[in-house]
Amino acid sequence: MKKVAVMLANGFEEIEAITIIDVLKRAGAQAKFVGLDADILTGVHGVKVHADTTLQNICESEFDMIVLPGGLPGAEHLANSAKLQALLKEFDSKDKFIGAICAAPMALAKAGVIKESYTCYPSFEAQVKDSGYISSQNVVKDGNIITSRGPATAMEFALELVKNLCGEKIYKEVKEGLLFNK
Image (cartoon, rainbow, N blue to C red; front, side):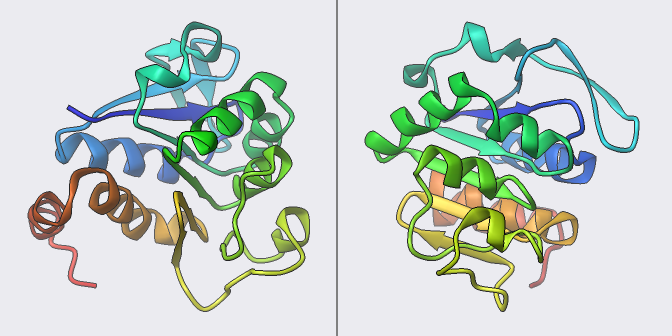
């Protein structure tokens, strides 16, 4: 069973976080919410989520993928965490999948793991990387890095995570079950 860490910090974007973990679990992945520095985290719209564990209690070898939902100030908290930056570098050095949506690609940039091509929430590209921003695609995969634009693209992003982590067959099954026709 594939294991995924979905990082949460106070101020996370609820649509993105819940969509990601829901779709991954539908695919049979063992997805866990990992709190940056707390067990109970509050999203940007006031929704509280109880994390399965915290960043201080995990290591790279436990997971096949790490995913960062966006939202502000959540994505800024992720970008400013030295422990998370080190973990992202470990994942990248082992060519493990790293996903980030909305403003969260700025955390990938700060860790130095962003590749040539990426997307993010419009207007955040200057905080990610001056070149390589693709505004015309909802989801961009470059090597082991998968990025997406924002709340409205969360389902497409989560399905792309499933495709890369679990394979085409499971991706198609989950996509059909969700009635996702795009």
